[in-house]
Amino acid sequence: MNSDQALFAYVTRLGDNALILGQRMVELVAAYPELEEELANANFALDYIGQARMFYTYAGELEGNGRGEDDFAFLRDENEFRNYLLIEQPNGHFGDSITMLVLFETFYLSQLEALSTCMDERLAEIAVRAEKEIRYHLRHNAHWLVRLGDGTDESRERVQGSVDTLWQYSGELFAADDVDRAFARAYGGPDLEALQQRWKKDIAAIFEQATVQMPADGWMAAGGKQGRHSEHLGYLIAEMQYLQRSHPGANW
Amino acid sequence: MLSIIDLGIVRDVIVDDKVTVVLVPTYSGCPATEVIEQNVVDALEKYGVDAVAIERALSPAWTTDWISEEGRKKLKEYGIAPPGYGASKRELLFGSRRIPCPRCDSANTSVVSEFGSTACKAAYKCNDCLEPFEYFKCI
Image (cartoon, rainbow over all chains, first blue to last red; front, side, top):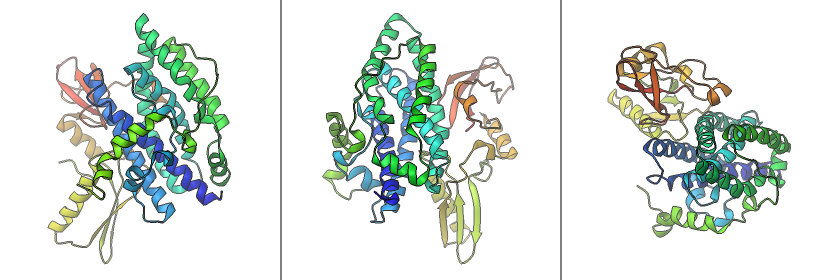
């Protein structure tokens, strides 16, 4: 894989993570437990979709085949998406959402911090923009995890359940593959081992305040980055792409 | 009247055979981005300028530090508590802020919600004059 291919694949993956997570959050609009959280969630989803637009637009330019952001979002099949398995898991209860977001955003924030100094100018620019927003997300979501964990016996039990269930998807965030390695070599991309050390420390600090146990590392799910997804992604893609697939070329 | 110049959104204006306005988007998902761009085109058209190009500059990233003094004054007059300076990093994660009420200047205020009517603002209430207000978040 040459450096151009690595950059294209890496940027597309960033777009996929942002879009799929944004879409999962959009599903929660009008289904969240209280009005303030509705606003927060909708605003977060908007940030993610905005980031997906920037990543996909750049990917289209790198590819040079005339594909735009909408082509990447609406005209690709399930196995072409390269998002992490963690964020395609179906929405459960409020604690599931908060846990998933804390696990992912603790990683995403440090990934963006690393990317803001990488050698691709455009990617660094997008990363600087996105990093500022994700810092606010993490602040909000980490506070909630602490409140739920260090809350009632029931809220702790539920959120511990979320942590125990989602932990198996956390390994994939740090499992370097060819794209990660080629991108790191060519553009000074993030060192996933270093990111993992940092993530473990950050998560441990949040879990301690939340009085939540960190599970032992066992088997870790993988495959999302290579296009091998859980069945959940299929339903999400079908709903997201339904209108464009039924009426090709439709626009407002 | 608060303008996009007060908000630090206009990066540059280049005049040659056409007018190119370089804008910096604020939040990634800001729904007003395209509206602002269209408004710029419309405003220039009103002055008889037809050849307009809009460019988006991503870097350096927009920060509330670019909101002018005049802009902060106008925000406060409108009833929105303006952001502080120094949008710095980790402190944003776990620090707390003291936002004065834009109506009575009391520091005795509380957060109602981290997100108000838009992504860039938080909802607050004043415990002294009892009025609600929004705070333009530092970013």
